[in-house]
Length: 225
Image 1 (cartoon, rainbow, N blue to C red):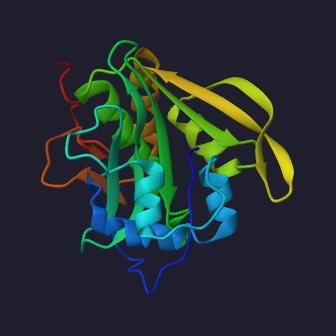
Image 2 (cartoon, rainbow, N blue to C red; image 1 turned 30 degrees about the vertical axis):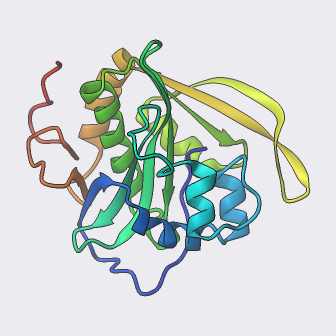
């Protein structure tokens, strides 16, 4: 489910600053354009095979269909410092009882391989463990999706299982890999990742410059609640 992917018109590829903000309905037109790339869509979303417009995407993902907040999901737009949308990431199936969720990510094609995805994932994990009190984050990806494999491993996720022939696309079945990360494991992985990553690019929550709410993080981690 975790993934990275498609080309838009004339993106500013030189941005060194990126922000996460809540996903808005206006973002779906851009995201739907990315997912009209059949190959990208089939790698990112296990359930959707037909290209969708913005309205179809909103309905399929059940993001904004109710006026009440949906506590089971939390999606963010990844934007450049000038506000251009370049990816989406979020948590699905959030359980207050089990204190876990499923992480997903999709990066627009021209941004891949530039270090934005791993920083956005790290910030999402900080949010999951330090802001909403989760104890576990799970992710799934198609077995041939090496980018997701490398990114989740880099963040400290452990491979927990392989569902054989669970993902149908492009006329054949692929295995699906399950990976998981516990809160206590993220503490160690976070420190190692912070030392590994360079200072640029930087991904932060919009308007939140406090140490620890950006990746790479500042000198001090945000306090546990």
